Length: 413
Image (cartoon, rainbow, N blue to C red; front, top):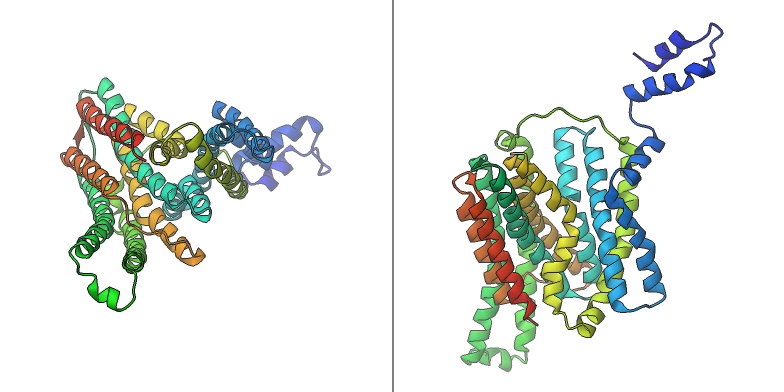
């Protein structure tokens, strides 16, 4: 019933609405349209107990501006980002509910890893290139091994075996393999150049008064920036494949749609505000890593590869495990593998381009150990999902590999 008809029906003859009916009218109108701003933000701020951790936002700001101990600055901003990541996801979901499947898919693809992008840019602008690389690699490994492993394990305790759409899973894992290979090539180039230098093949460069290290860096930058542009193109093609041309491969079991808890405009404002707050907390977090690592003898690669991804993906991790326990493995695969694809083909190339524009020489060259770690992780995941089935033993395998990698990076400087 239109709002005008509702008003006419409940009016007392002179066009006014009796006070006793005023609340009822507002309720009817709100039920037929979008939630009001007050209702939207009440849900946004008080809809989850996890939002209690938002109290750590002012604590992190106080610790930063009072220059308190680095561990306090790191811990407060670390905890503050957890509910902020949840709120970013919630605002994105609420906006998606009214935008249709294609726009919703694009929105989720763009903001699905907003925390990783914010933390990555904050680290990049502070010249913490090592943190950028390890945190991005850690996000991929966290999704592929930790989250998928926990999901398989949780589902395995409830179901003897879980099934999922194998064609879509294989398409996603193949793209993940491509992204992995593109990260191997810069490492192979670097190793080849070093071998050539050790073999005395840098004589021509010496005659030309060209420093071999500068030559290698120049080559790595060309490879990385060109690869970044190509990967962004592949990512756009993948979105088209997933949302348009072959969307039927990614369809999941239909569920009753929930009524939106926020209006589109209020969700958009909330998304923007949360992004700004997250950027401040990320800046404090990244700025305290160096001092925290030195003072408390924590390897920086461990912080970047293990700790930061857990914070950025905490809410996503819970959702994935919850969906797996409900038997919705397509959603679980979509969250874990899909998020890894976004990071490898969108977030990392985007950061390379941002570094190119801002004058920071971020490349796709990862250390040999890190490259091998990524390669074996993608190989294991591809092996386990190619049959379209999962069980608790496969989850245990993924978690075991993740623990071994975490242990190795704990002793890596």
